[in-house]
Each structure stands twice: as C-alpha cells, then as structure tokens.
Length: 334
Ligand code: ASP
Image 1: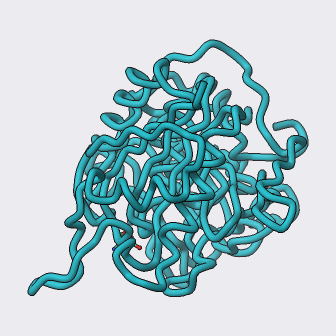
Image 2: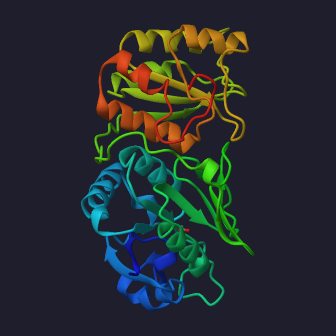
C-alpha cells in the first residue's frame, strides 16, 4: 500500500506569485499538486490549505491552530509536510516541536527561496526532501531545506538569499540527501518519551532582549509593569551581563523576585551559553536567571512561551528549563 502524505500549505515564497504589491503568497496547494507529485513517486499525496500568508504575518495563535490541526489529522497519514515562509519558519518549527512532542509520525516543515513557479527554484528540491522525510517513518518535527533535514527546534535561518538558508545550530543534521539517497543519521533522532497529545497552550507575554553595552536596566522594570511574564536575554559571549555602573543583574534579581521568568543565553549563534564561568554569568544565575545553554534563539523564545503556557508555578518553570523536551538543549545535566 502506498504511504499517505498530507501537505499543509501556510504560504511563503514557495507558493508566491508576483503582484503589483510585490511578491505575495498566492498559489493554493491544489495549484502545486502536479509539481509536488513529480517529486513524490510511489506516495499518495493529499493537500490542504491552512493559510496563504507571508510568514511575517504568522502569529502564535497560528502555531497553536496548526498544531491542533496536525493533532487532529495525524492519525490518517504516514507523514505531514508543512509548507511555510522561510522568514519565521524556525519559530514555527521550534514551537511545533514543543506543542507536538511525542507525535508518532514525521512532521516536516519546508519552504523555499524562490517560488515553485520559477524555473530555477529550490522549491521542488526542498519539497522532495521534506516529502521523503515525511515518508521515512521516523517520528518528530523536522525542517527540510537544501537537501538537509534538521530537528525543528535546532533550525535557524542564517542567510537571506542563498539556497542554504537554514542550518542546524549546535546539533548535527538528522538526514541528508546525497548519492546515497536520503540517508538518515538515526543516532541523531529523538526517542519518543511519552504519549502524544497536542499541548497548544502558550503565553505571548514574552520578550526577546538583546543586550548591548550601555542598555538601561530599567527596561526590565518596564516589561514587568507592562505585564510581560518572561524575558529571554541574549547576553554577551557565554551569557554575561553587566553589574557595574548600570546594574543590569540587580534589575534581573528585582524582577525575578516579583515572578518574572528570566532566561539567559548568548547572542553568539554557535556553541551556546554557560553562565558558570565568569562573575558576570554567575551573578546573573544567583539573581534568578535560568540558563538557555545551547538553544537557538527561536527555540529559547518559543520554549519560554510554551512553558509559561503550561504553568505559573516557579518551581515547575525551573524544572521545564532543566530538561530537554524536544531536542532543543544539550548540556550536561540537561
Ligand atoms: N517573506 C517570505 C516568508 O517568510 C520569505 C520566504 O518564504 O522565503 O513568507
């Protein structure tokens, strides 16, 4: 029996058309079926339109609705491909990794740098990779791009124009297409650790703050006053923050004592943070900051949103950040 794959289209460049207003998502998934079938030999494809949006216009409520939809339909398919704009794709794939943890089929998110209608586009190659990963039988949330497959919560868009726009950050690729075909590195896949049910609650009262020399620490007080429940701070190098002249760490202490979750990571893309090396990190941890370690920025922000959607209990929040939920973090003791 042929394996059944569902393609869910959300929009983005892959399905875009030229218009007087610029490049806009315009094609429906049915319009792309002939092309998609060309790269899906021996598979049965079905398509569904979820939205037709540039991914700048995808919001957390769309992630929850998409996860909900995937949760409803996954039982009927061997795999699901989500077509998505590349700009915020890594946020969506990261959040889907949390919301759809322990799903028993592959969910593979892809997009492209050129429209499927363009004669030299990367669109079909990316769809080919995503569709065959979706048919692989290996469960989880993945991103397929430029003949590589990565965990959904490790993907990040690192180039604006080239076809190798995505990288797997601080984690090896889980599959690659080469002259060996689709080669899956099984040792890099996640083990199913529990039963699946979509967990779509989240809090959008979360802020991403990139530290720069001279930043006024008052910003944290302002965020608390505005009702933000969590902030992910991208600190310097291994995650350091200032405490002389302008006492940023003092302000971290002040807001964490009043219930705000402060997650601290690095503004360096590679190799992750470690706040236990310098005084500027150790003091931040003593002030109540939790560590993001080697998470991508997208995974850190969406994990913070997701965790704050599960609980308000500070102990439980700390516990969520001390464990690896979907492959997002890999550090000793995590
Ligand atoms: N602006 C587009 C989007 O993210 C870019 C793309 O799909 O490559 O929807």
